[in-house]
Amino acid sequence: MISTTKVASFLLLSLLFISLRAHDGFSCTHDEIEQNPETLPIEEDFSSLVGDGRVLASYNNIRIYPYYGFLDNAPSAFASYVKNRLIPPGISYFEAALKIKYPVVGDLKLSSSVRTLCGKTTPSILFSGVPADVVIVYDHAAESGTQIAATSQCYVASGSGRTLISRAVINRNMLSPTTNVLVHEKNMYTMMHEMMHTLGFSSALYPRFLDSNGKKKNWSYQESVNWR
Image (tube, rainbow, N blue to C red; front, side):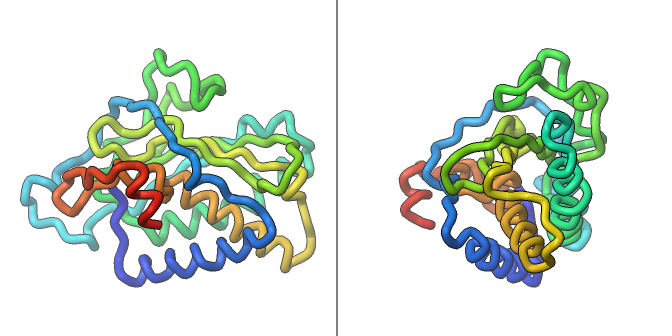
């Protein structure tokens, strides 16, 4: 599972509060959905479990790879806004703030048998491998209602059970390119909120969380929902 320093934890909690405020008037249904991502065999570094004396400071920072290929058929202004202005600051923040206890060894590379990700055709680049511990696949839709985005967990690691690949679908009717600084800032907070879900911070996934000894906490889904 992901580990953070106390300072990073405080910053994440602060960000969560701010990003929740960014959702004011809109809906966020992640914690109401019981997700059942598929398990993917992947080589992870579990050396921290064998008493090698490593401390938090020696853990690697998490590597996050955003895939934007599914935005190719979106309006060009929207796709450019998401790829160049909206998502990169959030990726940079989380890569700097989060350390990972059980990282992927080398590149995250999928077997050719993994033909789909959350119902979408698997991008060919993932068969070659990308330098990442987590891949976030960005997609888009034009939906009615007040939901800005929806996140699905596609695959979790067979060893640690943590998220490996997620899909985030952005509702173009609720989030549009903007030159307004304040609106853009709100959009970034909103997508950083979504990014937290893609990284596994969702009560539906709490039963998969590990304790400091690498053991599952064994919460039921309903217990995790009641806990939040």
